[in-house]
Image (tube, rainbow, N blue to C red):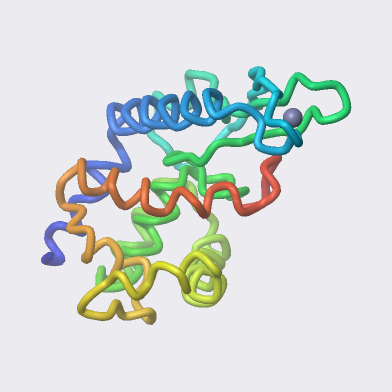
Length: 203
Ligand SMILES: [Zn+2]
């Protein structure tokens, strides 16, 4: 993948409302799967899951995103004494991060290889604090690399992925120059989206 492609990520993905709408549909599918599976915490698995979504206001999306309400799919078991919350994996939200997951992935990736001045322009356009971007970098290079998830999946990549250029190296491995491949990457990362306590919100 060439630098040119990375230059286009903003226009092709981050600034396009249709991409976010598509991600919402994917999340609806993931949520339905979760609902149908029923409660995983009841001893006899008798609990049915009822909607208990919560409101999110993810940052960094296109203008249209600010005009609609955004909800994180979530369910609660209906059995008295259990009532456990089930929050399905998501392609839109990366754990407790307050920015759209796709923004966290692509902006962190663009730090590897795009000219710093260009990253600055995009950072400002998306309204991302400089320290937040720095934290994402640390998150990918330290927290993500140390995560159980990464330890389990990294061997799948041949040739071996460069951990020093994450998440760029992941984007490259998934060849995300096509939208369906970007989706595939976000689906791949979805186990990470429920590792944190589901309710709000740091960065
Ligand atoms: Zn239950």
